[in-house]
Length: 391
Image (tube, rainbow, N blue to C red):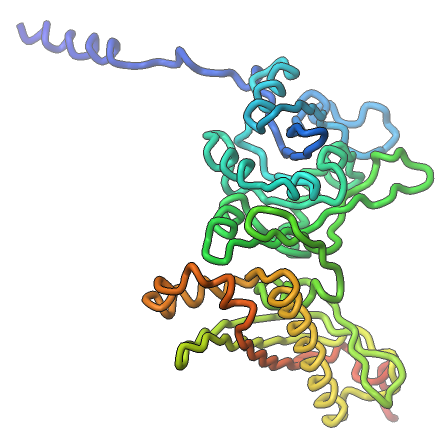
């Protein structure tokens, strides 16, 4: 009897095992690296950039030493909704489309004008999409950016991902975008992508996307593009300013100092006094001089003090310009002031949340910038000429 019990246990285990009856082999998958959304003629256009494993493994068989790009293909489909476009897109691909490796989402400004709430809902609801995929805005059609054959990276999707990691603008994921749009501020800031003109002897697709400016979204709709220098002020207040070199000039010197940003910390301190809502913005900035085209010597404490003062004044002016655009022109809280008020004054926020759109434009905002130059470079003298040792 004991022997039967011993034999019965493995038999039952075999019956309960599910096995791999519903598996999908990797050879049957079309791996999507990036997706783009456009809107034309009343229909949503969904574009996917799909990895081609055979070309990736074969290498450059031509021996010309060309780009490793070309390991992707592009497919586009349209529909009344993004879900309908996805269904039609699958019909154009002979393999089961897998979106789990999609790391980049591009939304054209034309599609953004219609509203992006539908797209966000789809990306976060559809099981395969990654909520941490980076989201960008594009001046022209998103499908044109995905079609590029980047000379340096394997695909334009990888190029965009690297740009996001370099923090050349904002670095926003699909989840963060949803929180920004649906949050108390009801706004979002996306990096704006353009296409770099190709070299004269290259195909028009053999080029790369690049960051230029920001796309601003009020509620879920694209409303404005901002470029330098205003974009610097927007990034400064949005706690996204990084990887930038700024020129600073002051009289009576001719020329300028170029300062590379090393560290930037922006803190928001909300206040409610006598029913008056206000915000204090403290900005701590550190940088190093990478170019001096003046005749001034940075070893002179007076010159260094003047440079820091002028840099602080320039950053303050850019921050005020960004505030004027946000409060007076667009009347939208792009800098998440509402989030801070909700955190520090939950009861007052709950009572006034419906009035935030009228409170924000008239709010008094104080900006204090403390900028310091902590490095002057390998050379201390003007024009980068090191002093000769005296014999």
